[in-house]
Length: 297
Image 1 (cartoon, rainbow, N blue to C red):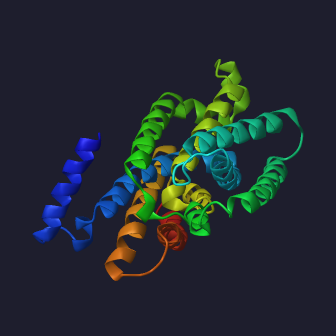
Image 2 (cartoon, helix red, strand yellow; image 1 turned 180 degrees about the vertical axis):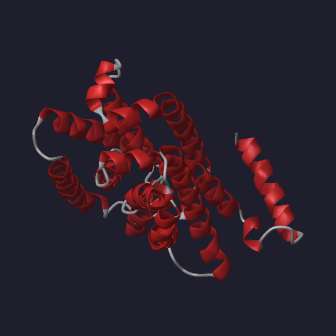
């Protein structure tokens, strides 16, 4: 895989030098960022459709905040501060599964329960940061919070590819059943579909793709990329299939434009923020044209 990436970067650099591609593509980190965008865009767009249907908009935000705690734990345990993936994935997966277990075992409303766990995560993270600040530059934590394309390396890309393949395999086999569980759990049980098991599979998928996206989008903003493209697609779609593919397209375009446009315009803005702003523009456009589409239908 590393050799393939080197060949692709060299080809892009040559094409950019020759004027066939934009000049910014001669830099390896730009190619890395765009490749990552082409992976996380479709994934977050597709998964976001079920997030909207299940009304779990704030679940990924809680996991994103837990990512900051996971990074702090990794640094305290001696992992490299640029890629503390063992503690990051370990803590966030445990956090997500425990939160879902509690949600299934109590009568508390989902938004209230997620808010409780979100508060706990932020409190633990704030306490751990007091110990971490003396060991690393606080700029590293800014990259975790808001994302930075400058920090994406071969290890990050390899992990993202593995996570993407895993999520595609799980989603391809389970998407229709997840939709059925979301719309009608009783009918799902009649058809021998296990809602609780699929719920844990979905929570696992959200958690790992959220963690894998932290370096590009940032822990604070990854929840927005799950939600905004799906919400925009909901405005303009008349079927579940259209809803899914529209969300994938909007999320992918948001990632690509949000990364590429600030470079071309030389704007000093974080990639995560730019991606979400582009997604918000798509949402506003979809909201504006929704009445027109309703009249056509």
